[in-house]
Amino acid sequence: MHQTSNAEVPALTVGGNVNGNVITKGKGLNVGGNIAGNVTMNDGGDAFVGSVSGSLQNNANGNGSSSVIGDISGFVNTNGGNTTYGGNLTGTANANGGGTLSNQPVTAPFDPSTEASNAMNVLSQFSDQLSGADANSSYSINGGKVTFNAVGNDSGLAIFSITDAKSFFDNAFEFDFSMTNTQSILFNVFGGDNTVFDIKANFLASAATIYGSIFLWNFVDATVLNLASQFGGSILALNADVTNHNNIEGTLVAKNLTQYGEIHSQPLNFVPPTEVPVPAALPLFLSGLIGFFAMRRNRKKSL
Image 1: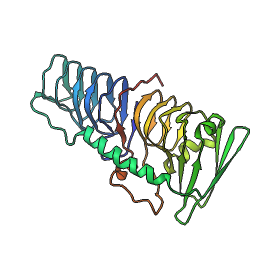
Image 2 (image 1 turned 90 degrees about the horizontal axis):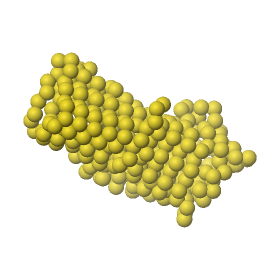
Image 3 (image 1 turned 90 degrees about the vertical axis):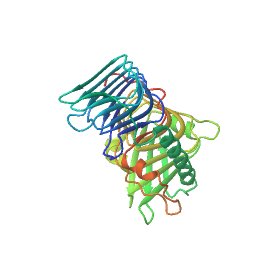
Image 4 (image 1 turned 60 degrees about the horizontal axis):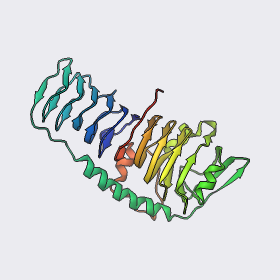
């Protein structure tokens, strides 16, 4: 996983375990469980981890430290910072560049599993409320090309409703966007009895990167999302197992993640409908935080 973040909160928060290869770009890490795979923190910051049986490489460079609450049976290295562990050391732990290695009790600033669970509950209610917003914009499909004709309301919000989503995505190969008075776009996606979606459409004219910060995709009832192409926009898919084979240009909140592409988190410039209360957890989501999911599976191929 390659994650970028401009948030002041940890760049990555995981309620459970981390498997596979994870690369963070953005300061900070908080993992409630065990790092069984390989985690590299390119921008350093403070790392708090339950235990490490795999490896944790924190490139703190004078701005951060690594703290393991339990045991280290794998490998932990902090470049330019301290390494502290509260349990047993049967593996290897280092602190390079003037840092110190110590064995003493460690307390994380917050419990990531509780934080993840609470945030998921709040964001689930937010997703339900968003799903009730009336559409004010429409789309057309011609030969596999979907043109979203976005027309913003008084707040500049355009809302699309995609029903029978499996058929929609099966027949969509390109996304194009026409915008009038539009500052942000909400896509409410409903699958009905079919909740497994294979999304392969290309975002034309670099729309994924240009407009990713103003798109919010609310997958109301999805259980599986397979993203074959670069995807533009932040994703609420709280009940879904997500696999991304290419980059996501936005924030992701999901049940599980199997990752082959990067996630380029960015602040979400999205203003909810006036009738939908802004939940307390939304500022974290808007800030670019990824990780209110239990990352039970995480695979990354070379990019």
